[in-house]
Image (cartoon, rainbow, N blue to C red):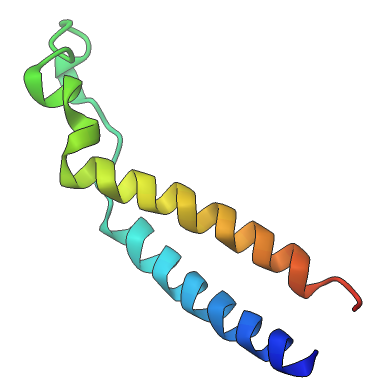
Length: 78
């Protein structure tokens, strides 16, 4: 059981470091003055999920869920 806990702890630390890096790599969510004039529906805005920024957002969600799951599992008394 101790080996499993050690492996999960190592995965937890790697996930924490990766989550920090992915969040810092993302751009801000400020729309600027373009959203006031209704210019937010551009080609870039519609296809954002296929871009590198969309991949970073997806990776952040996956790593955040993994972070929460590992936190709960590591705090269980087994």
